[in-house]
Image (cartoon, rainbow, N blue to C red; front, side):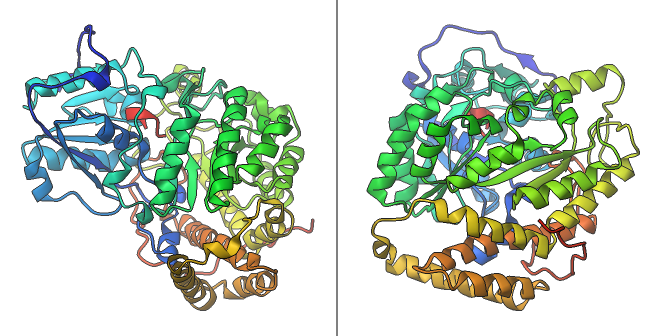
Length: 564
């Protein structure tokens, strides 16, 4: 079908739209392709089924007209059924590039049942050409295009003869957002809860598509909205929430204004919910914000470090990482109880034969446990894509490889280096050594509950016993790295006031996933980039590490709106 952009028309505000006809909307979130960031191997240990609730499509569920019926299916938990398709008038779906194959599968199954499909989210907003068979494309965030889509469906739910595109021109203010439809999910099915506070990022990193999709001036929800969503998640049994903002410190003043409300909320809840987010390293330059981050019980922050090599940072326009020495910034985060995670990119034009060793050394000295190591991929709507496209270095039809870039060195060498770094960084002894550093020098700096015994409810006790039993079985008995696990266990169990048990849970759950994931990468079962279109045969059927990762030991030392 050929995309047909629809004209802009004057309209009532989205939340005031009253349709003439009743509709049944089936909202389906596609399953993630198996990857580093989905933490599949941790699920059986914790007894959960999926990673995070999908913010964008749950927001759409809340925004649908009140007289329209809605059902929600997260295919990471349970597949869409023929009965649900038969019930629906229209199918809504949304997703990221990593879910592209699954999105196409949802479209195909829906069409086989005679149902029209409306597709939104970051993938279609960035590259609508990826989805020629969808009936309706919602490109951009929630706003005037959402209303026009709803009005069209009020008139007819028939599949159009040609593809229709609804492009957002005027975004809905985030202060008008309702809470995502958490009532449609079981929150305890997920490893983490999720909240979106802002959208957009002021920085212009060459490889990133966020400014092109969501703008450089971060838009914000109110503090009251955030506290309401935190209450919903916590009341539903969630004990860890991830802020999915593109950059939590994108607007430093707004972040500083939000944190006191979260601090007050945490004091009332006695620090029962851990918080985490994504941010840029320039956060280290705001000492008062860091102090409040600690008091708000932010325990983990993902930083886009990308590379420790200054020339590479300059080349990718990531100059904010040069404002303060990286290791000095990390020390400031650790001092307020924040365990850092980092993104790492390989395959840059500035890479040399020494780059892999530089990454290994950086892992050792930074003591960052979680490092997402990917080879470079040129996303549409980025400066990197435009630059490489002009010189013929963006490849088409790359289903047999994990990057669409013609690297300056052979592709196989880039992948070999990637496997070498992955194997070292997530070798059991190396990984547990970095966790040991954080257990000694980061975790003790975190806020502590005033009344810890109040957390000893029967639900929490049962959950803790079951989790510990699974950890011991999978990590301490069945794994090939059990000696390293028991060394950690014996040290942590001696810490006073139950702190050690909490550390054991945090370390073992995540480390197990990372160790097994690394082995699958080395065996070629997984992609070297989260944006890869290459299909793999990896299926997380067992959380047991079955093959030893032999590597040298350490040297001494969105989803916003419909576009989520």
